[in-house]
Image 1 (cartoon, rainbow, N blue to C red):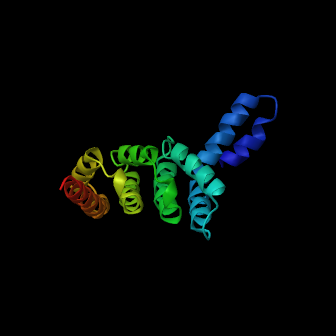
Image 2 (image 1 turned 90 degrees about the vertical axis):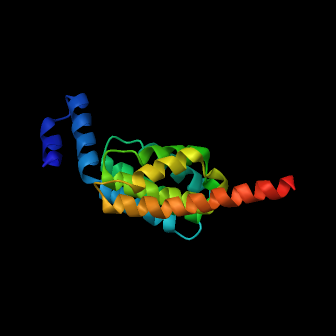
Length: 173
């Protein structure tokens, strides 16, 4: 196992030891990350400080090189915005919209679901770019789950955009 290799390397070569440790973390803890992040997010009403720190960490994790970490982070961001809607942000929207275009179907599906949750919590964040990305994902030939997640999110985004347009029209009158 990679963990055994870390122990065999000794303490003299810290660079290789560090790289081996990072490999272990990357390969074996994404599930723990997913469970821990979701448990924290689902905890009864996280305080603003805790929720903000979790949000920052999840935004960073959404750009991780490991697809499993990215998918877990996207899912957790969706859960977080449900628990703490005040954390919805342009940064979250941009990270999730970009993740919908990722090469891995799990990342795309998780990001699409999270975008739907984001816009449910903060309809003002719906955008044409998000809509277009979700439209493309809704036609994904390779993954039924991506299509379903994107189609559901697309409904929420389009509803938010219609409501915004109607509100703007009413203000003009």
